[in-house]
Length: 117
Length: 117
DNA sequence: GTTTTCTATAACCATCACGTTACATAAAGA
DNA sequence: TCTTTATGTAACGTGATGGTTATAGAAAAC
Image (tube, rainbow over all chains, first blue to last red):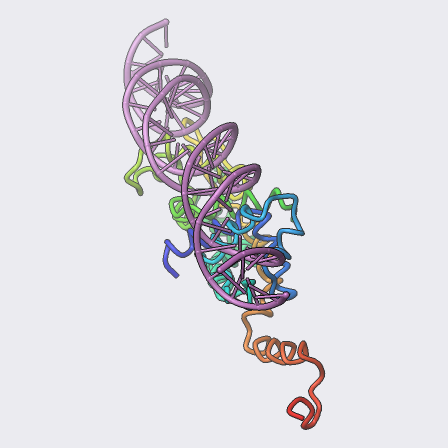
């Protein structure tokens, strides 16, 4: 996944209103009116959030009569998880032990009774 | 994990320079000078990025003589992954089929030869 | 065609984000 | 103490972000 795309996805996720919108859309598709009812902000504000989510590829929209249904597109979330997975080793218990080992090796290989003499 | 914390973590990850800093720190701890050498920007700019990363809990810093070493703290990355994991079902193949099933159920339970009569 | 309903856009404002340069500060060393 | 090295902070410019109200546009209903 490109840096540009990661900028958009993580940027979209950096706002709690947009995360709440995604959580709502995970239950079921919704139109702008439905989503606006969830928050204490105006409809244009919600429309702007949807635009951000759409540009990040996190939602798609299609007309259904007079209204436009927003639909969760989880693929970018998978990609973002993939990026984070590269760091998985750094928060596992096994890595914690490996890390300590490497730190000790930075001071030179331990030798029996070596450093205190 | 709180919304406030997720705001900080995803916000920190929304910048490619900061992601590159994390990637570098995954190899080894580094000071501000080391990191500045990686980019075409000033040292104060890098210091600001480190401040953002520190407030998100993604790095820790401790003095080592005249310099301050930055150290990757992966725990928030784990938390962010945890949030994303809630959506894992939505990008799996099995969910895609479940989704189609549920959509068809929204139109009412299918009955043998029911709707075309 | 006119109205109604739902949504997008325009214009505006306040604040934040990200970069700069200049300068202040902290620790080490002559 | 004075200097050197490494880093943080202040002040600033500029563009993005997140909200508002007012208005425009698109599809359905009458």
